[in-house]
Amino acid sequence: MTVATMNAFILALAVASVTLTKANTTIGLGPSPFGPPTPPWRENFETPNPARFTSKNGLQHCEPWPHCVEMVDSMMEHNADLGGGRKGLQVNTSSDVCTGCTKPGDLCYDSANKTCAPYASKYLISTHPYTFGDYEVSMRTGHLADGTAAVGTRTCFTPGFSMEHNDYDPLHNEIALCFDGANATQAKFLYCYNQTLHTTIFDLGFDSSAALHTYKVTWRSDSITWYVEGKVAHKDVGVAGKTIPWEQLTMTVGLLKPTGPNPAKSSSLLVEYVSYSPGAAEDYLGEGSAVAVSDVVV
Image (cartoon, rainbow, N blue to C red; front, side, top):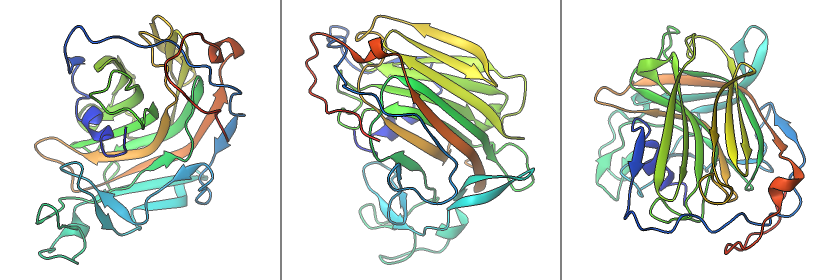
């Protein structure tokens, strides 16, 4: 799956369960022998870290997919002041920077579609793939300059999506934690395999856009457990290599996207840190995989 095709998955977040292809598609091929797991790490976003995360040269707008437009780099700031003495990553999304573009060479102009892109945004993807383990993020979801929830936006932290398998490939796997600005007191726990998206909506009991909060996803070969502020919120249990994602996945951090009939013109997302620690040794062993994978690296 390319970075571009990831958006097809994101656009379906409001759907509880979506089947994209024929019912007789084969489900899974068995867990892959990944080799040695990645050592644990924590990223505080003090400076850009290309060994861990990749950002594009300039801002990219890619809608409609797969057309992408190079934009300015100012929409993402490392070591930003997050309030309360805390620092981290600030991601800004804006339509204002795209005002007035009319011709090739103008900021935000999409030559492929001969139009001006409606907004600019930026996010990070991991330089290397990851697999079973614990993924934690401290973040404040999309909000406006006055601190209120950014209605007309979608915020996501994605522990992983399969780069090499698009949404119409039975091997496409994805795990994501998302928030709709119109319902900032709810979280959506999502995972995808065999071209089917599974969604659980969870009431947080707080406004995710008002302050930093901690979320964690523990991905194992036969389950995904979702945590909010250190407490178990939900658990999905399945069959290893068949009904729980099993591919090596690429992480996405800082995804803030205007969406809906009235998309927000300007909003911000704050990420204090992201951390990863590998799962249990037995999760990395498997028989009969039809997928050739390389060892996971730092």
